[in-house]
Image (cartoon, rainbow over the protein chains, first blue to last red):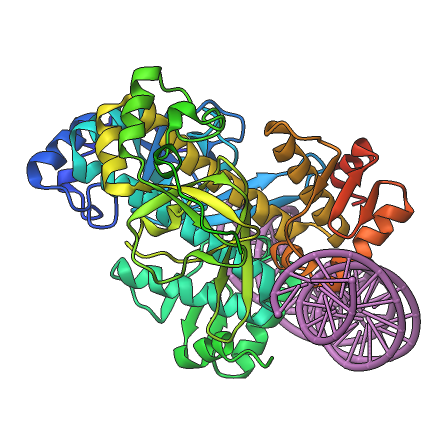
Amino acid sequence: MKSVIPVTVVEIKAACSQCNLRELCLPFGLDPREINQLDELVGARRKIKRQQHLYRSGDGFEAIYAIRAGSFKTDVILEDGRDQVTGFQMTGEVLGLDGISTEHHSCNAIALEDSEVCVIPFGRLEELSRQVESLQHQFHKIMSREIVRDHGVMMLLGSMRAEERLAAFLLNMSQRFTVRGFSPSEFHLRMTRDEIGSYLGLKLETVSRAFSRFQDEGLVAVQQKHIRILDTPGLKRLLNHHNN
Amino acid sequence: MKSVIPVTVVEIKAACSQCNLRELCLPFGLDPREINQLDELVGARRKIKRQQHLYRSGDGFEAIYAIRAGSFKTDVILEDGRDQVTGFQMTGEVLGLDGISTEHHSCNAIALEDSEVCVIPFGRLEELSRQVESLQHQFHKIMSREIVRDHGVMMLLGSMRAEERLAAFLLNMSQRFTVRGFSPSEFHLRMTRDEIGSYLGLKLETVSRAFSRFQDEGLVAVQQKHIRILDTPGLKRLLNHHNN
DNA sequence: AAATCGTATTGACGTGGATCAAAGGGCTCC
DNA sequence: GGAGCCCTTTGATCCACGTCAATACGATTT
């Protein structure tokens, strides 16, 4: 348990204009004046400890969240207990879009590590995006991107074999780390094999075995959650040249 | 081939105000004056013959489409030829949202039968939804609904067995027919076993066998594409009581 | 530094759905 | 209204992944 530390005002209030993630996030494409307007509506930041929920399925929907630091998973749970991880989210990505349709969230968002989000009250976002065309458009792009991403996951779940799924996953992670200024070839996964498996529609043992196979073939070096990609073209080949 | 019939003006121009699908579609929640504004931006209707593309992956994005009559499938195709059906769309549903994120479509939309869509130029939709709050909100709901739907498909593909997937599919179709005023228990599928299989991540033989099993168990009566659901609770039981 | 617990790896074996194959059956298009 | 072709069904066999089980590893706690 953390001891009680006085929180300074600058920490409480989000400020897109100062944020180095703004090129990935909602402010993308806005001019400085417009970003200031966005600053005014973005509420306080909220810290979420590892394993804690940002929101739960069924919660009323009031805001969307931009990830300021850390990472999350989203999942859906069936009555009989089965669950499916629907995505992993990194800094600059937006959480909570599922809640718009029914005014209630339809999935759970759980922090994979101690994280921080910017709270964006949705009513006020709609209001501002009626005034700021570029914000409106960027928001629509973010929603559309989520739809396109989901189609990619369907392709993966519906038509790929285990090793292809894992290769696609690793390449995707690599690409997203790269965009954020990290190494494309070496990174730390924040999720367990079980969570990767759930996302990829595989059992954790199958994920583990696929990692081992990749390691044997010299494609990656795996040490628990630490991944070093040794042969990116090799991984890509696994995806495209499916022996049909 | 239909003979050449002179097309009247009222047929050419879409008119949401006259459309019996407006409660399912973009005009939902708008007052009569607002619907008239929407009428003005919705372009001509466009007829798409069975098996023809409404748009293709890679096409530039200019408009979204509301299905006025008929039905569609969307699919994604990989370089190696594998394809994945990402959805089936019915009247009142909106197609093309995938194109917003990159200004290009990322999937194909193909008519399952002779169909007709209303063309909604996207730039003008954004413009109007800056002025009409209820339109803006309805549009956001439609996009969000698509995201939630996709999560459901991921759940299906990632954690369900073949018969559960087909049961979920049938119940979903039934529900959507019901909303449109058709029988919940008796309907005609417009897609082939192969397309159902692609959507559900199964081979067509598996789909066919699952249908036969359902028939043997008295859950449904299947005659090619004509489906009669005999035991809805039975199908639901298949879904929820997964013997874990 | 030992104890504990969650996470990961690896092996042996079972099975659900894929694959291969063949035979009808019903649309579609002349 | 008939020919051809696509679609569907069903059977036999195979294999990728799931299941069950044991062990090992690493991080955290005490």
